[in-house]
Length: 180
Image (cartoon, rainbow, N blue to C red; front, side, top):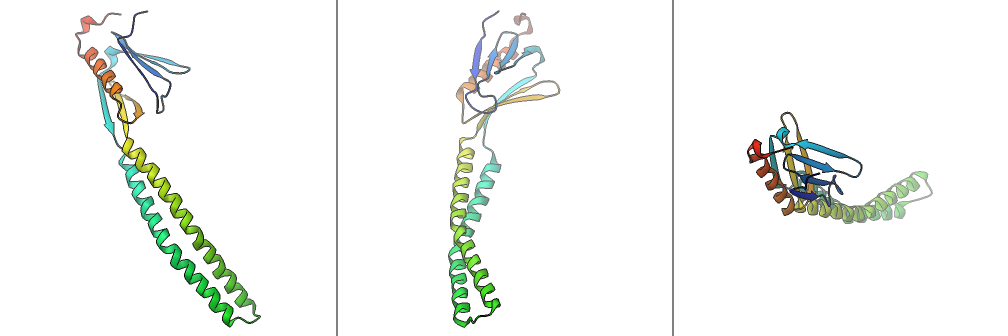
């Protein structure tokens, strides 16, 4: 078996633990339980790009806005519910309607107390989404006549750029130079 020209091992992403190997006439993907070989003659183009998913940024903004609204509403809602309970207790007799109002307003106050921790959790989730947005993904795309395969790793990965350059050089080499 011939020696590979270059290799790239996936340390993150969906193909973690897999390895792409470039030979003079083929590209080989070794996974945990599978192997795939693609003749370079079948490959139309290769593209590599660092990308950030704007959907993650959009969701982070939405979550931060929701957290801010919940945090702003929590205090006044708690105070309002407590004031309503106190008002009903002042005028309360032994009627069942008063008891229902007191328990309803107490439940509203308890719900309002939960809004602050929910806002904090939303803020943490938004921060995680912002981090994933900021780190981005480096994606290698191999284009064939009718399909495209993508391989992604987290962050800006210079080794994947170098691997793509090596594949592109092999594609640009004269076909006579590619032996079996």
